[in-house]
Length: 236
Image 1 (tube, rainbow, N blue to C red):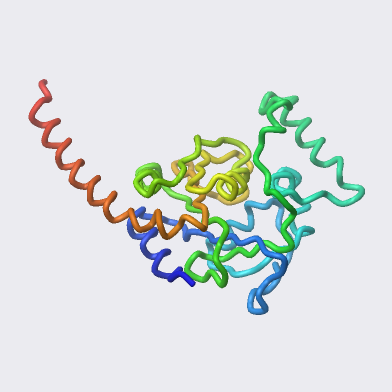
Image 2: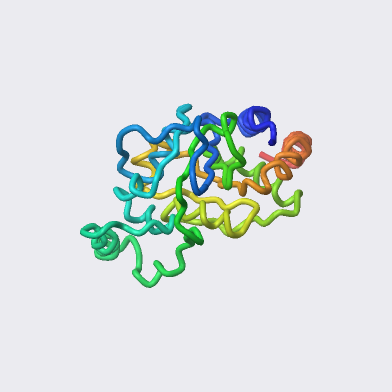
């Protein structure tokens, strides 16, 4: 298995991360040393916050039922008696002008309902992740995008709301999928206003991380070049 602690350190140091990268793996069942989620959460992205804070746990589909939109992107059917909650929240979003309902069919979804979802800090990943969620500032995530391009992995178009659709987008498309975030995610996770997300396909993580040192060094050299150029060519 990959050296996930080293990969987490590399991402944190190179991208100047304030939150730990979160590994998410979808499996039929959880390893015996990964406990189930304790308690309940109001949203699927709340699980990202818990894992970024250092918790290791797995969820089952019913743990996602409080989040109709997240259940939709994760292909988790709502139980009898709660099916209308997705319609209700989408109706609210449509009524206030947040979305147009014709956008919904274009939202990426996982191809199948996962038996469990395993959430951990990347450095504690017990199995190979399907995706790694990186929250950071634009200057850092820029390097991640450039490393993906240099690694010849897909860089998907920038996504908006809902933030959680970046997970199935990265699972199906590979490479990296970034989202500016959505207001629900920002409320539930407390991510700073000056940060957004890049979700890295687990299958491409090492290949992309392998190009980070080159990209970071190149950017440092170019920063000096452009500063010198600005000083030389700027006129009062």
